[in-house]
Image (cartoon, rainbow, N blue to C red; front, side, top):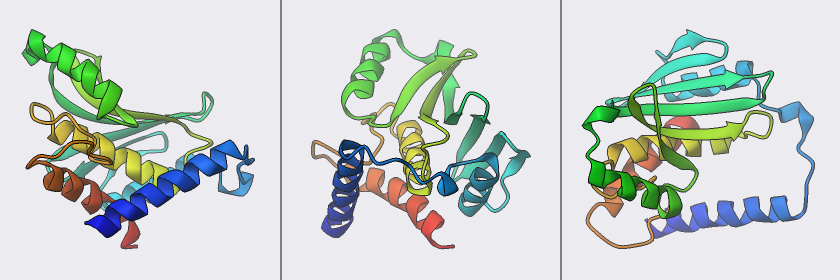
Length: 178
């Protein structure tokens, strides 16, 4: 567990250093719908869809991935429950989670549904960041009603930390298995 956390922190520091150095992205590895289709099928060989919109299953969670190449945007989304079922006192907790424990994914409302969503510029999206974003999004859905955490980093202790890390690591392991 400590090795995994150490590797994740090392990747985060390397990413921050790359941003600080203002590195120009290698355009040969710019994310596209074709590349994203490959990544989606790494996570779920039976994923369905077409360029720009896919549906995959990760455990009991439906994960939608949508892109707009013209606008240069990508979204990975997991529906959690109808918005009418969200208790009013939970709204503040969702906003708190968006501030400190959701990290790169966020809770969001659209189309009368509460979603866990990871949104990123398509062009700058790396394979690793896509896998991490999907993992965080699934974790937000899985921890709704309990810890409200993406699982990438857990800042406080508790019994749920290992389960959050397990969801996160399972998705990363699926991606790395191919």
